[in-house]
Length: 227
Image 1 (cartoon, helix red, strand yellow):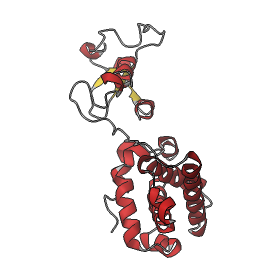
Image 2 (tube, one colour; image 1 turned 120 degrees about the vertical axis):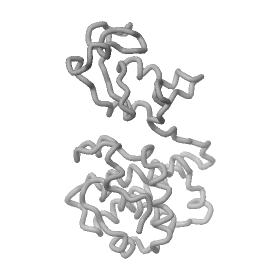
Image 3 (cartoon, one colour; image 1 turned 90 degrees about the vertical axis):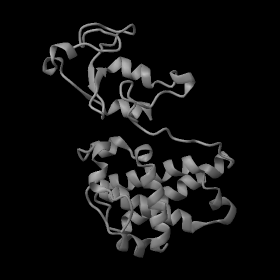
Image 4 (cartoon, one colour; image 1 turned 30 degrees about the vertical axis):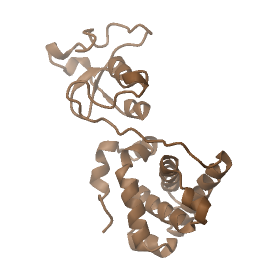
């Protein structure tokens, strides 16, 4: 997650900064003038908490090599949480079974997208596939293997399509999705609640950027819970 977070940070031109803010407070080097040890120019970036610091220094701070191998996920100044760490428990399923469920989820998202008339915007199915499979990676849906629980697949795919369609600007209602998914609105609501809880960990920021959005604008288009 650190790499995705760093990739979306906005650079700040040195010329618009106050004189006292034109150097990184961590390494005390002027922005844009002194190469780091690896030859990369230190540039000013602004964090979601509005603190400004050097691009190389914040990268080192968030690196998995920091904090005993776990990496930091907070601002070094105010400790504002910058992104959530993804929990990835050991997967008891075989790799083949794990990939099979990935394929089932992906196919369900693509099929549901077509049923809802979203083929004109393939990014929606792509975003939904990505989110559904990220959630699968986090939780490892062993119930699907143990109980052949297709209802769980339908619910996760349906909730992913709802979230993706609203994120990318062609939202479909819960009623429309439920009528196509045939999983009932309560399982979809439950799946959406899990997706929303992990939204910062599972959303594909590159697809989001194509419609001019960043993670900070998610709250403007996604409700915390389905109505």
